[in-house]
Length: 340
Image 1 (cartoon, helix red, strand yellow):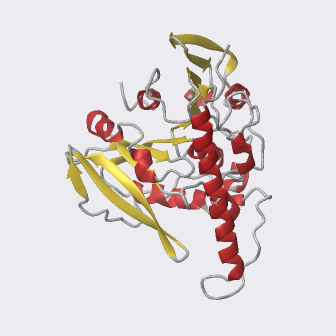
Image 2: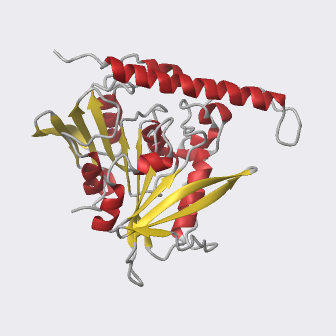
């Protein structure tokens, strides 16, 4: 019989959710008092799904214009063979940052794949970049890793998650601009661009994949959920990685404490991935293989336009980036064909 969620984990998760809700309340109060120019600000209504994650029929489906407006990321700093640089995107009166990791010894004319990584709720981009050995992977596997930063460490993925969803943050537009800026770099290959995200970042990965088909060659949500219940208008390769059980984002759709942060219920993960496979033209039921004890990979075949759809389930009741018995970073990079 499976163990129930660890009490310490649930307490930590609850503390994070309460902190997020308190922050939402504080932002709402500040905005109700007036905008940055002293004018009154309309009361927020978190119920409608923001248009920033609307289905692709109402959102641009072309790739961001690469090469337009060359961006100077500066020399950055180099440590252990990896160069760290920062960029920023204007958002009202603030600049939203993002971090870029790349091999320090890129040769002239060398173009590398790009992996965009979205952090989870209450976790910033720097912490996300250290949740696994991203720097070691960048140096070894030769790719560019990009870590965007959500508003108050959250992403507006429609039904979830506050504060970003309550504020109606244009995260889809922000990520479009991050991609546009990164595309101007001489060391990247826009044709090999991939997206992954953890928890709230995984939810956002689904929303982006639906709203921007063709921008990313493949997506790999981890410990997230397709809360918007969307599918792309064209086949998109998907690797969903999830722990069973997960006390925060449920694998089987059961109620959890985190449901208070979403206006939509958590769907069953296997059902969501199966629906994605059907929308991508995959044939029949998946092949199921237990790779190591407790780690199960389900693979759909015959998908349209060469797409691949897989569900990778690992044991454990922790809500964190998996390192054992499944190496989550290795699984994601191999799915992206960045690591061979």
